[in-house]
Image (cartoon, one colour):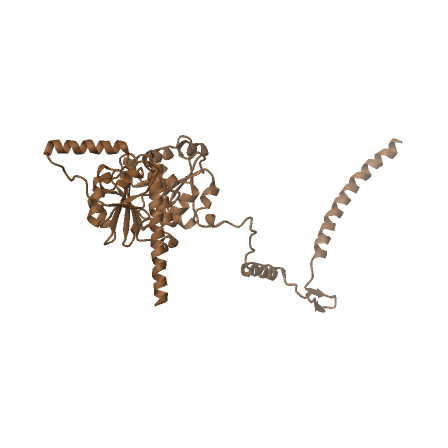
Length: 420
């Protein structure tokens, strides 16, 4: 039994060697079978060339041909999902604010303070709609803070080149925002110059020979609403005298709803320079909601309609009595400006309407300008007992009344021309 087992052990070893040798030879033969001979040489010395199948080339030539085809073949179009967007193709880059980054807080400190805002010449715009209106009108952006990249991609790409783009947390924008629901994007712009702005063509086409002068308006909400009404009525320009609230204050911008970029605004004017910004032969009309003493003397209808404020009337009566005591004679300290109803015709020439603040009313300079240009006071009748109308409401009534009169005059002229 032992003799039978031992030979078995010796037989196994050569068998393994044979299998390994056969495996190597088999691999060589497989490689050989894969090759296509170019020529066949017979023992007699005859040489027969093998014809290649149509379309087949030598390996080297085939590799060179495939490389040539790859160079000449146009690149495959990428799928829409992987194609770079226009914003990405423009090469724009943005920074991401790191913890403790004070760029947002330092800029907000400047643009929220009027002295710093005027010194630096920068304003703050918040919200995609307001920023888009500003960019279309030609306002120059300096810096954008945004919380999501999608908000930035909604803006015109060509307007973002050379602008600092900083991504911040939404909580940071919320801390500095004046909106109840922040929109996630804030822009710092250079203070617009009305001469360089490109206002909408539709606004210019519907512009009327009607200007608005704001006199000592201090309420941001009222001024923003007045600017919105001026743009809606088609005013050619809005002038703001010294003492008015800054039209580029965030609250005024929010109330204006984009009117700042639809009608030219010229602010911080002295009364001596106001006529320089008005067309020739312009008549200035005053909406005096306070009802001065001389106003009641010139027209009893004013007091009958409740246009006269009792407190203001007593104040100016007292002032007039003091003048009489000191000088011993009555002083014509108030310009003689006639009063007329607001719905009477007052737009036969280029017109400018002066709107005063609710607290102090119009200034003496505005009445003097109205007198020198042949203008009048415009009376909006109210129920007796009502002190005065809101400044924004009075401005809207007068501006749209002026638009109605100008439109009616234009239609009348067109009918006359058609008859002739």
